[in-house]
Amino acid sequence: MQAIRSRDTKPELLIRRVLHAQGLRYRVAAKPLPDLRRTADIVFRPAKLAIFVDGCYWHGCPDHYVPPKTNTNYWSAKVLRNMTRDRDTNAQLQAAGWTVLRFWEHESADGCALTITAALGRIRDSRH
Image 1 (cartoon, rainbow, N blue to C red):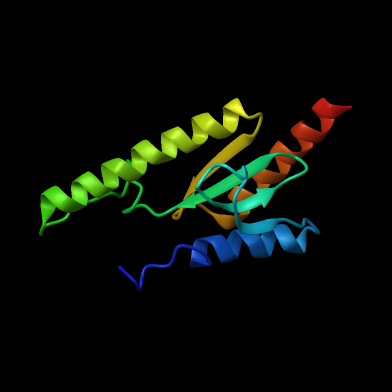
Image 2 (image 1 turned 120 degrees about the vertical axis):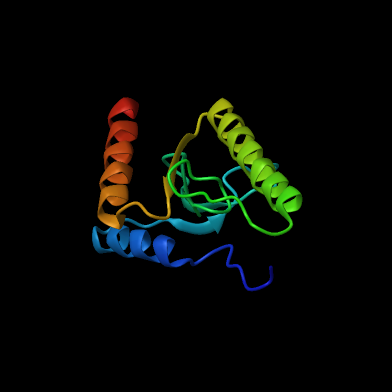
């Protein structure tokens, strides 16, 4: 478990590289809310936009999750807890006025960046 990265994964780095090239600046692995013991992969604080890049195995991707062959009860329960925590995180952030975007690790970095910039545009437009 120690070898599993919680930040700076390849999909995160690809998305961040595209966003940075567009001139966008953000926080990495930051808590959107001080009282919430969870970190988002990318945070745009002024816009209240939290981005999560979820691993297909660890977060139960409907397209790519394959149940484990060994220690099935433990690992399946772990993935289910992760999915439940993800839904709770979304609900808590949205209740606090944040926009939450979740992407799967297999999604295109360019496509993710387009969705993020569009969300930032909508947030900025709604404030004016």
